Amino acid sequence: MTSSIPLTWPRVEETCYRVTLPLTKLSLQELVARCQAGRTPERAAFTELLRRHQAHVERIIYHLAPDWDDRADLVQEVWIRVYRNIHKLQDASKFRGWLSRIATNLFYDELRKRKRHQPPLSLDAPLKTHDGEISWELAATDASPDDVVRTDEFYDQLRQAIASLPETFRTTIVLREIEGLSYEEIAQITGVSLGTVKSRIARARQRLQTELQPHLDQPLS
Image: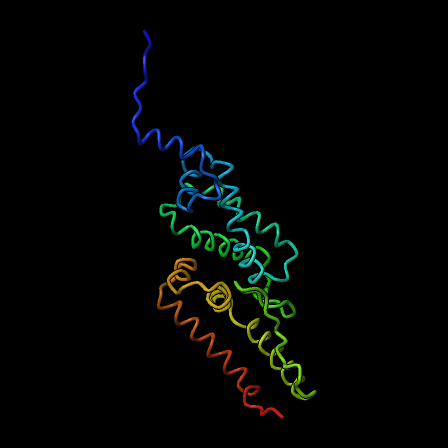
């Protein structure tokens, strides 16, 4: 006489699903769920999360601390914090914003430790966007020598103006203009109200416009 173990179709389908579906095909929510299922995150699922979001973390750290030599160490520390705290994330769909908040908080933790000011944007590096890199040097190839000099001077002033913004303004500008995050996401990351985020961005843009207006008013030859 043989005994049988009763199986329900949902259990069979779940088992087959876990065995056959590649990690690269899993949704963000499914990956987070796997990382939260055990006492420690599942290594394969966590590695896939890292693969999908590594560039995002690197961009944030780069734009907040472009002149720090240990940016790679900061990126690694971000993922260590994610590994240790991913079980605290209640809504997997908000993983990207949660990750951005960890990276931003780490930057400010390090900034306070070092007790020195760091500009969020390199004065020499190209601007990195989701579509690739954009050079600050945008003078037309057929521009006159005077136009080239004037354009170079303008973008030098732009870099300096951004670097001189207060830290809170620079952070919101980086998250909004570089990372393309919504006002709501920035509010969640920075821990301030939506109105404060909008106010900071508006004031930062106004300050940049005021500082750059003399260069904008100069006629081109």
